[in-house]
Length: 296
Image 1 (cartoon, rainbow, N blue to C red):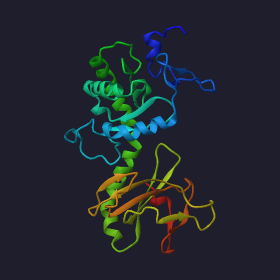
Image 2: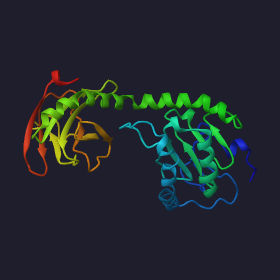
Image 3: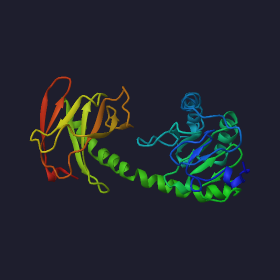
Image 4: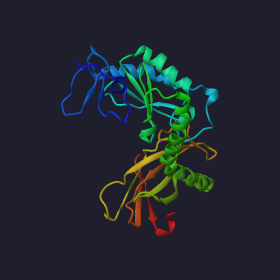
């Protein structure tokens, strides 16, 4: 086996797309990079043991005192979300928290415990992703050995801009809800639910119906079309937890403490007409007329 150069052993994400430190070849033509000889064979269970043991460590990398004001759509500052395909741990960070010291801690402490792994701080722009190896760090597509301070000054603004661009549609939803929540809170009173509003997406062929209901159980309602214009129950995606003051307290998951929750349903973009909203627990049904003038 010909010894690998440093550039070959420690590629950026743009320089190498394949499996890392599997210790064996995989069928399918996807290349495998083993950083050295004698890499032990990777098994999927290794990832799950590592995740359980190390996820709390990543959560503590950013101190409570450093946290920015609550953002309902933000992931944790260091969100570990990775496949179990090879020895690459993907971490989706808030790049406002990424510093030289944080990178050094990951390299020294985490990779000190797991030397056959690498950590990727994933950016929405791949050219800004940071690959941390036990021996070196690759900053986006910048050359091996670049000064870390210079690299971060170049990469972080671009990574943050890409991150905000990806979140912009969801931020628009949040602003849409915040404008309407005071009225929805006044309207719900003793009703089981209220329609907060209907939003036409600017970036997708999509209509979003926002229903607010009491309690934290967002699965107690289903929405369907009584005229059979389309088949089955409407798909849904996204949910928000709301407190007694009409403040958004969560996104995706609903804490048991939520006084209300909002769920997003997706009628076909060109559908106008009645929608039946059914309480799965009580069997009670209500009809909502979807009209063009109600769509923002």
